[in-house]
Image (cartoon, rainbow, N blue to C red; front, side):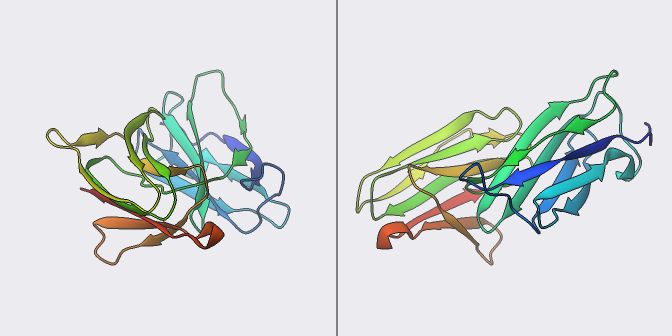
Length: 194
């Protein structure tokens, strides 16, 4: 492991792709070591952090996730460091959706939608859609994935298409509710995972 300075810098942009986001948390998570370092963007949406500040140091072969999140929006970038790397410049673009940051198994989805939606579960480590449920307008669906449960390496995020969503975490810590209140239509999604 090393504590040699390895600066990471960039800007965080909102879902429109052009507006910068100030005062948002940015985290560099060393997936290999299960350690992280974080900072907050300034009023211009700029951030700077250093992997050297990760507790215990890092290795130049580690898998690093760089992510930002706030109010139901997140952006995630994945990189595997190499021995020739000395720094990383990376802008982060937010999108609407849920973000879970640890290995887990997804059991089921309960969705109730005022308008037609596709509910997608995206595995964080591979960035691949591993679960998809279509819900009709005004419909409700309780989809159980069966055995084996869907394994999500590194966690997952939930995306509702085509419109944006807001997140409300449930007090049980078992399910997360995601609501879309655009156009006075409410869509709720509960993802059960362990």
